Length: 284
Image (cartoon, rainbow, N blue to C red; front, side, top):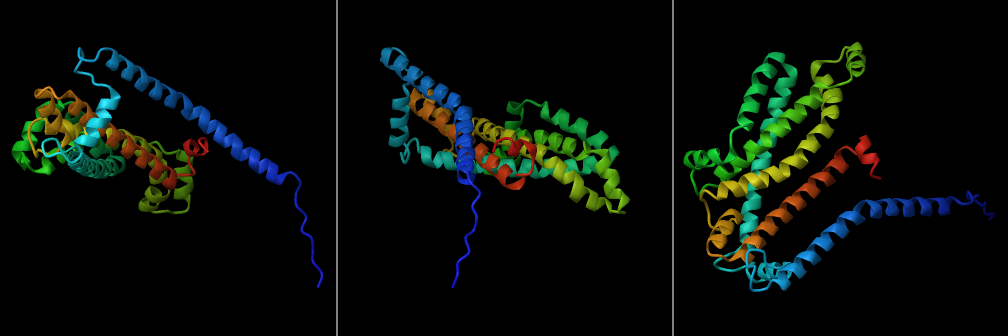
């Protein structure tokens, strides 16, 4: 039985290795400045806090904050673990409600010009209302202990950027693509599904990444005006009032970490849903 030798293109393995190494070098150059700034800021913060130990209690050292996180994670007075879970649940609920409402209004606004002329000014006016003024109203409508009141606060902040961005993505479609699709006698729903929605997806994910941080801000601010005890907003208010600033900063760090993780989750989802978009290909 004879064997057939398969010719191997010379240098193919080397070129693949160079491509992978070049990709990692580009990623390292992209992330290294942020890592250096982050680590440097923590180091300066630690040195400054230790140098003024006993004099400055409002800004504890990062090592003290980390130790506070460990000590109060399951604490009875300041349960940071349960508080992070409660606030994150409210923020994600508000994110879902605001995103759903924003997408539905955007679809109606993009389809009907009259609806757009009516809904856009209303949405702009609603986004201009101070968030602090709305929190007591939601507490009165849905109940001060009901997480839905905090979700609605977060949903109000999420609604406008999602609605505005998705509307822009739906209407700013290349006219040549629309004419080509309609030349095949495509229905309006086919045009929306095949042309408008794919064009609006990058706008949607950009707004959604912004909305992740806004939802946490809305939930925590709403918690300042009352609610369940095991949430970050209440712990921040109570610990700051009792001058336990290490607990206050620990709760703030948990809120920031929750926002970062949620943002990264949306960024990963964006890579999976629209890998064909130019912004995703340029990061490869």
